[in-house]
Image 1 (cartoon, rainbow, N blue to C red):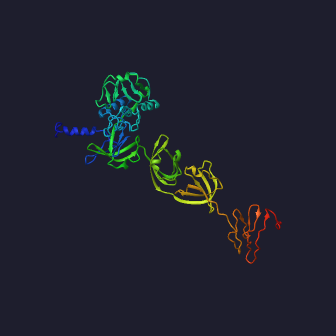
Image 2 (cartoon, rainbow, N blue to C red; image 1 turned 30 degrees about the vertical axis):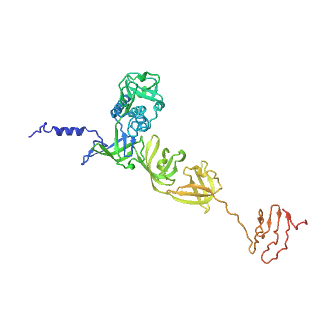
Image 3 (cartoon, rainbow, N blue to C red; image 1 turned 90 degrees about the horizontal axis):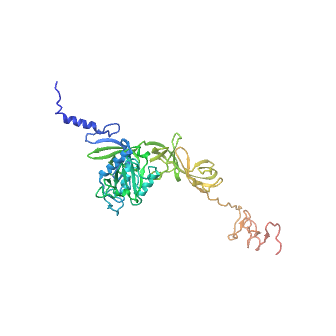
Length: 484
């Protein structure tokens, strides 16, 4: 039997060992290698940056201590070797940017960090600042960390300590286990361009009165977190791939990678679910968006940021929603309309109005009883009460539910007049401010008197006219008029 030579096959064995040692990028296992040498896989993480043709996610890494995660994040920022840029790193925590044009180092092209942008990048890497969220100035960073009970006034206690040094409105840097980090600390160490990184010097600013000290609380310092890696994916100039996604969203990315570039083949929210139903309330004035399913189940969705995705949505639309759960609430990400309701109108009399102005009952002119909702828009019924005559525009959804879109008072009916058959009316015989008595010709009665028009009193056909002259009678009197 022939035996293989280990030396001859060493390159093959090394290649096999390297392949087995690759991390499992694809969902459920090792990456899948395509015939064209591309690698396909799936990664999950939090969106930390969105650009016109790419986006970046931060993955969950191994579980590690907060201090270790801070050190790893500081190492990563230092290794990027970005220069100092005024306002850099403020648009999205942990992402170098061009900053505020006109300030030191901000020329509109160069990316980098300023002092608070650099500190926030390290905090974001350890999960102490939301990746991709905005960053205020140094005083704002301190205020936010105090509000979230991450830090407290005063220096930390070695050997395990993290202390922030802040001259409000001027400058901020930090100390992680005895090693200073930032864009400068008064000691002259760090990047010659003033960029963010480790500052291996005596940090003379740390002992001055201008810099107030804040330390990470022990409960935070001794906690554990997940510090992952940043991955950037190309969208191939297709903005629809990232449409609807926001910084901080937890996503699943299907990708194909080759020659140092990864392109997106699929993108979805982690834990996304779908639901179909009919919109019964639009989520106006802070109220939730309400959808009723065919099984009569009602789902209510968080009203925040709904306006950006509801567009021309109307009550009665049949929709399919893509949503995720966020704590006890539901957040809508996308809405597709599959059918619109029928638009109808009716005129009639209001017979009842709900106290909360959520619905009302109408008896139509045709004698039909209509139960109508307002779709959450109570203003439709402001000033409307029972017995009011109204004209209602409404929609009829696929499930038969009627929802009013407008309610307006109906105009009053024109006054009815009665003309005695066979009579004629002489033009110009009606005095302004008088009323005509139906069936009596043109005899008019001003307030308080009964006056026959000058000239003739028109009689029914076949009668003769009275001579010229008028006869007045006091209001309510009978019989012939008294002499003047």
